[in-house]
Image (cartoon, rainbow, N blue to C red; front, side):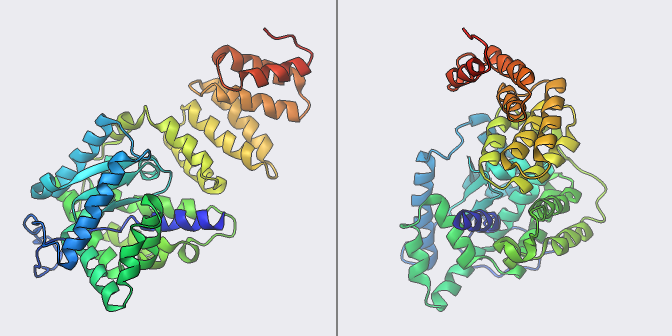
Length: 393
């Protein structure tokens, strides 16, 4: 469990792992006059950059074949479109891949491969917030930060470890390990934030949305009892603290008065996928963080019964003091609102049965079988009804 927790946090740190280029260029200061470098060309294979580029080409091939890849053409085109708005002339060199895993992460490799994980998509409120993260990754790419970290690794005699990780720990594990070992410096993170904000502004997004991403993420991480995200998460160990990051981004966007936000645009693209994302979030096994996330989603969309179900189910699964009563309240509200999955009634019946309310349990389980007669556990639910003295068909 500790290893999984570390990997989750380390992978969250990857939202800053990523890029390089083939051409050495003097880095201009990042201000309103800053211009992106010209498109990068493929480096010689014998060079540091060429080796890193080739390594990521191999990883991209693996990713295309991976069962983690979300094979939804509309979503991929949508993400590609955002990246192209931000990347402008670099658009032809960027390839975006949505990946199904419930952690907060986006990354960009020096060969132009960008990953966006489903846990991130679940946590941004609108397209502008998503653009803030993708713009940050594009900032690393345009500033060649990964190549700088690679050279630093070589200088510290850890290059062999750096290279060896790619063939040992696997696609998802390697990103977490590399994030922990070779994360960007705080100055590089600050620079990527500045570039990301500029790219947002130039693409027509509202830069004021950028700071909200880090406010929300910190609140979620801080929800764990006794948890201090500034000390327990590798992401905050090498990124600027989120309160500083939020304040800086807020100050940088202080003169902005608007721009495209795109809440409905993002929502419509994710609507068909969000059930699976929420189900994955439950399986992540961090109920306090999950409930903080769901509380925010419910505040944003109070009429969605499915969100009430998922929060109630998280509470039911945790089953600490007060969780059963809170879960029952969520389940009742989910039933009233409608739109919850059939699993609501299976879980609701289980809570009633555990409390000795057999009539209520029978009603809930009957409703479950009406909605999902072919469910894999339908026979088990019928057996429970038989135990309660009801002959089922």
